[in-house]
Image (cartoon, rainbow, N blue to C red; front, side, top):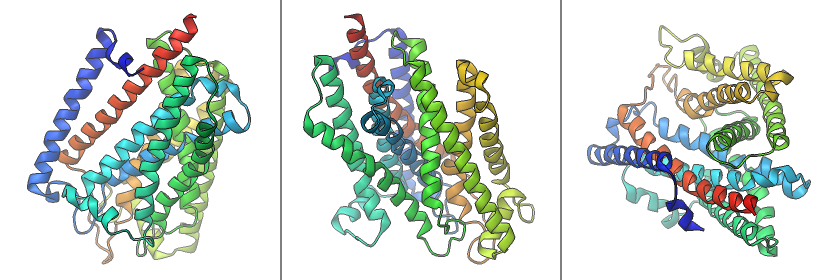
Length: 386
């Protein structure tokens, strides 16, 4: 089936070459960072985690969202998801590869990554994340590839593949919960030390994943002869809508706790995010956009006419995705370091090096997803033509 990756029209190859060019630019920027050191990033002694770790956090959530497709299909026999399961699984493969590369970029010297397997620390949440992430990536690659092969041969899935599918369900929840515990278990960072960090991570993941899948399915419908059933799309919309509503509830609970209790470790960071402190307000516009985007997305999705109008639905998904990315992919990580332990405001802007390397990583992940999707679509079109 792999040979299908090397067959495509002019538009396909233009897209592939554009991604390869972006990967090359990102790699050159990484070599520059490797030569000069981490000072070329926007991070510092005060803000030691930045754009790389933010992207890692967001992408792990997108990967975990494969659960909302796999679980209804295999536990509740919701057959409409059968046509998009491989897309969700291969999306998880690509996003987890990107997550691991963002961690790799953040550690500085490449050999430092060997400290994790060579010096395992079972009491550290980071150790467990480095186990669960590659494990879940391999699981979904094996399951997705085997399932597509079985579909092409028109044979049922083997028993061991079904076993891996059922194993992947709790794995997704545990993987993203452990990611949340990395933050919630870090002392001295009041912004992160909340008991609902893990539930918020999961609920935002279950909103971001469907939003991205709806966008991707629409693009696939436009460019190929393969089409996802409207029943599957509407179920994804329902899941996304409820997840967004729960996320707003969690945010409201957080805001009440912060501003009613007036605990300084919590209050100062939220004051900075909403209003800024002493003229320092770099993240405030982003945080307002996040809250507004999620509310606007909910307002659109509750309208039946929007859910049945694909262009408007895609626009609502993009708005939701922007809000969710700002939350976990930009604000969450650096905001915990502002103010610092001495009460000083040291704001964090990502440097051009970080942004360029991130472009390269996203392009590599997109290239992998494109290749895997090319195989899936080709196989399903062949079956459709029979």
